[in-house]
Image (cartoon, rainbow, N blue to C red; front, side, top):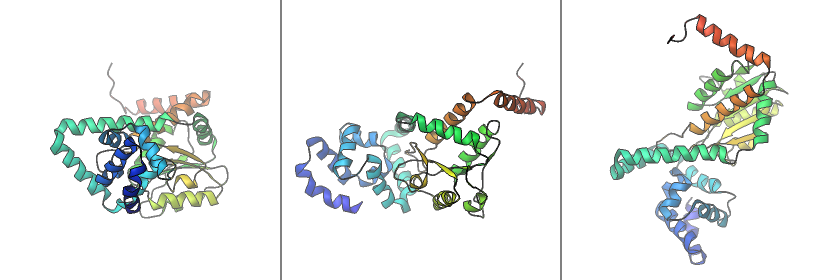
Length: 286
């Protein structure tokens, strides 16, 4: 990050007026580059989002996300505290309405980023791999472990081979030690990236398993180890990464798998529903 900040003053005379505004905004608010969405920072700099992309490419980055990642990595140690501090400052400036507005904006940004440029062929391929794999492992650490559990809950009727290894007390690698050729390992991680997930992805590759990654950047260490990569939006004003994009993608995958299923798929869904109703799992609102 500091290298970029040191370069910018010398570059500014040759920048266009719009990119010059971006440069000044970055110099004045380096921490906000890491914690704000591209749209929010563009608004602060009084430019359009495409200008932010051009600015990042002018500095030699392939995308705005890879540019922002440098700033995120530089403050990883205090990132959560920094974001919480920024949220408190926003509350003081704009009150509850300002906090709610920012949350709504970033939530919409995350959904748009998750699906705005999604590769339908890759999504279709991932659905087929998950549905046909002899064994399917879904993994994440922290909040993303519970996203894995949610995927298993949704998918148990259509992907009965799905398993969710836990990292508590053991490494994720131990949970996929039996994985092999033909199996699928779906791994989730967003910045700051959990070392266990990256290690598990690399191990799964050595075992010959297909790896599907859900992450927040094509430049993330998890993406570099995967066969199929889905990039979701995870930005948020609050201190922990947003799971909105992850949940939306999970639900999309399950919907696609069900839509491509057959009569056996329908029988499994009906059986689980019948079993739950037989055990009085739901309120009967007749």
